[in-house]
Length: 205
Image 1 (cartoon, rainbow, N blue to C red):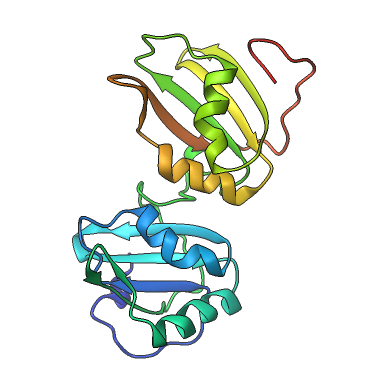
Image 2: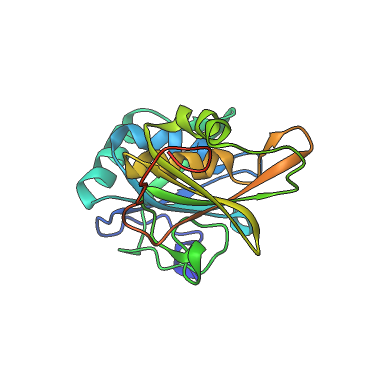
């Protein structure tokens, strides 16, 4: 899929996609985001575990260039491991890797936006709008929350003010439990542009 990246050290044309090498198994998506988010919006990220590499797509070429320019003078490292960055030979990430952000196919394939579709598995304790707000608000201003029950179980739509907040929440909370041993979060990007909330109650805000 990204074969031309591997082992490639030559300079390529400027791209909004950054190729990162020496990404150990102890390094996760949030670690990588912390290195590049100060420079601008991250659109997509995929870690290629088999190759110890990662690809990050920034909002535009100038943002990616600023990242690389900074890390030419400061050695980037995560958990004591030096990593190495360069422009990717890809101008866009169009990956089908299930571990990437912005994958293709189904709800999970939606491009990152500011609305998250959250499914709660193993729900042994009741989950309220207030509980969801407490869980998701540390990552940014939550504008609206709507909860409902479907065949998949208890679900919620959570709308942030900013796209970046939704992206951070998805990375940080995906697969986590709200309570010890239960209420596991399965988070995807919704295909909705705006949530409609007609009134505030125990199911919507």
